[in-house]
Length: 228
Image 1 (cartoon, rainbow, N blue to C red):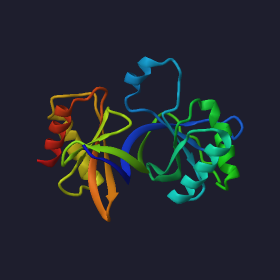
Image 2 (spheres, helix red, strand yellow):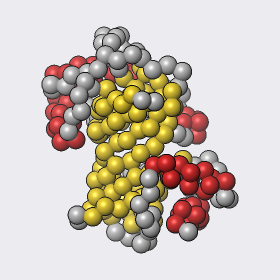
Image 3 (cartoon, helix red, strand yellow):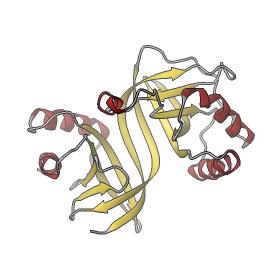
């Protein structure tokens, strides 16, 4: 099985809140929960952020975010994984830095300071309360193992699979298709997202499937429903 490194983008919906910062109380920090938190939280009593977005005043390039994060990690002995991100809530669009690898919510204050030192300006927008529904788009890197001509698996998390779509699909059509699939597949407890991969000058439309201990048979069944 071949291993590949891709760059791409993933789009998904999630209920989000904001995190209040003690040192930077006006900074807008969006907390994106783990879609499978009810499963993974059984293995730890520590409330650890899954993913946060530091909302910036302007859109920043993926390159500038990656370069700044390399500096932040080197200078402060951190292991942050950063990406360019846009969070859409209703008619409002928030650009920012999506971060993974934050061990405690109390670390966020210092992290904001680190990125401020790298030249980033952060938004002072209104806080988000009561788990508002958001459409989240993240530019990111993928490390994947090719299972067959359609199925790929994350090399870092065996609970995550991807499969290629036969043709492009809009976000609206994808949502409708996902409702159909979830009512017609013999399985439950999985999370779905729409994604794209860039490789060798080509773009591939793919679907991300996450479920604890997911079987390849279930992935194949979901793939067949989307593509047939």
